[in-house]
Image 1 (cartoon, rainbow over the protein chains, first blue to last red):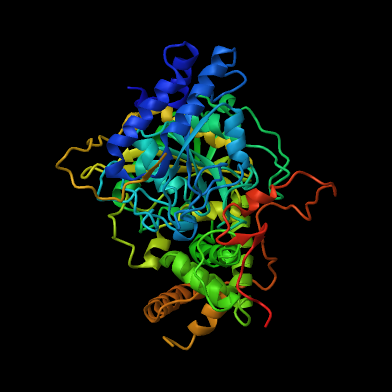
Image 2 (image 1 turned 120 degrees about the horizontal axis):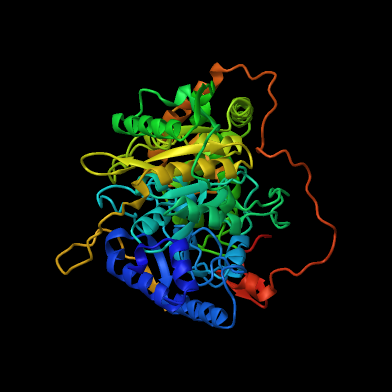
Length: 505
Length: 95
């Protein structure tokens, strides 16, 4: 079963000549054909293009290339449909870009290609990455492979669901307030948000530029370390990328955490925590103590202000970033008698409800008379939140927290109440506001129904090695990551819930 | 409109975003709820706090002023809704 293997597992089969990139790619394409009508993790994919890339990888291997110089040689990797790949669609889950084809490669796509990866498939997301459930996609929601009536999380819900369901061995998502870590937790896979500036944002369609980061979603911590090493590094095309050497992240993985101090933020174990999530987190604490970690209580006193701060700053930046969708140079155009009427009609027809809400909220927060009371105040509170973390990191090497206060919720459960949806991001968004790094790993299941639960490790700026080491040690001591959902293959009698992705070519 | 705090009509103009009457009602009510929640930030004294625009202390990043390869003209036009003679076509701007 090639589709149940990790990147590292597939790489060793390739290295030993026991399979080819074509065979691997074909297996994943078949898996997609079988289960996509149920999951709808992809917006589109191009089988012929994927197989061409796979054949090219096989040819390179035949002429002497190997993992040593191309660490992802022949491995299919799927990207969230907000990361540019030359010649591939780039819809951002929006009607306004429904027919957009990227004329250039993002830096991460270039790096993956240089590493030998087969880039295939455009993964579903909340429109412009705005959401926590992938219900805000203009192309229909993605379903959680563990329970088809539940959301996969968001906004990188397509990426997490595809990796969990064995439709691709690994994926890249983006994380502005938890959009990699929360869906990873909801789908029982690993998701890493790197430190702000670690990975180039060139070619990542901007949502909130001071918070966005690209990161890997994988089945194991080892695969996350491998992908992070490939995509990290300074890029002159992203003025916010940082000139910081890229360590060998795979070398950071060790099976013990002896002497590592892990902080437990007092404010995070609140009453809103679902009892089964709380139990799983407490059990994980015991495992880490047995592995030699010192658990220390810390305080992040401004935690209760994080949601208000984030949901002013991110929409303000979004309202500015999304001004570019005006129907002039690309995307949808709805005609009007003058340019302003054309912009307004285009945007009114092209954006979905959540994007409209955030543009309106951001416009309000930046508008004359309200700027100081809302946007500027939020930026000042952001300073306090960041200082909380930097102070706590003087006492500890990393922190342990839940990812989401609840297990995956039902489709439609929160879509009518935006504020309720925002409140579910409480444990993930401070990480982006503070610009630090975080990883989510599986740490258990609820009993009935059986739904995945994730745990989060937060690290200092550029402290990815430490959180990878802790996550790896924890993963090796437990077996949660070995469980995969059983997704029924589509038979003639099964009704199709989602709108199936478009197969191109 | 829906309340005293938010002038929806003004906001849709600033955002260049046309909304239906229904959308104005719904979004107006939701924004009111959301902004009530945001009032929480007023509990804090931020008078001596510097704002954080983004988390990494980088200032004025520039590159040498050298001509580099950029997106070819035709590629830049490849997604245009309407184009002719290598230009984007837009509605008349000057009367």
